[in-house]
Length: 328
Ligand code: NDP
Image (cartoon, rainbow, N blue to C red; front, side):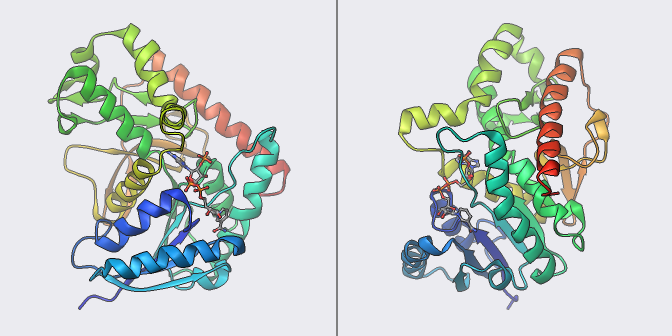
């Protein structure tokens, strides 16, 4: 039998994890023959709620769930982990300035980066879902000097999946017909979902849709503001779709992307496409053998250029802000 893979998850008593943990334990992450050990981190006041989640995991009797460890100390919970999902973060509360938000998250992601550095397995892969995800990932990787920076990613797969879904609806096709969507930049309202390189049923998506007005005044704002629209409609933030996208990202990173397609991943920039080196920004990526690479040679027209530059400028500003706070 295979040895269990050790999977750390933070914010484990939260909404996203109420969906995420059950998907991981069921085999959706690593396949039907790979046992997992869940190592769950929470802040101290949430440990009781986490106990309740663990009771439910026990009650699911998942054949692939080897064991569950819980705790509030990242130095213990991250011991030996092969995969880490950093979901827990400090949400923006009313009246909170951006600097306060970055500082509050620095207090979370700095020690977690350090703890991963000191205790995770040599092959650890880290995916940040908790917002502001890109900059939280930058803080974590900056505090983990012994882990290669490329092992830290942030989530833009939900934006990617949302964009694919909207394209499919517009074209009146199944979402399986949509490929090569790209999210560029920050997981924020400045993100740029690019359809100029996307394909629908093998044809150029921009040609199939052929509607610049829809692109600018419908598609882009719908994808960019989808999170707020779901809160408005549901009375709670998107959780199941965020968990599903989190699984999709790590699944593809570990097991590889589909032939002839790519996915969107926020990764430390190597300067490709004029994106400032070192920031964690979203690109079209393929993966193979557990490593990602940025898809080269994509068309970037003037419209795309301006949108990418604006989102990258926001990430550079966030980096400056966390630099001045001594977090990176
Ligand atoms: P959720 O589980 O709903 O969200 C967790 C994080 O994911 C938030 O930062 C949220 O950002 C982010 N996120 C990213 N994409 C999405 C998306 N599409 N939709 C919704 N959220 C998204 O939050 P809860 O408040 O339910 O749970 C958070 C848990 O984390 C709590 O149990 C808390 O105790 C815990 N926590 C744990 C820490 C730790 O383990 N050390 C540290 C801090 C918190 P946004 O706020 O912008 O929606």
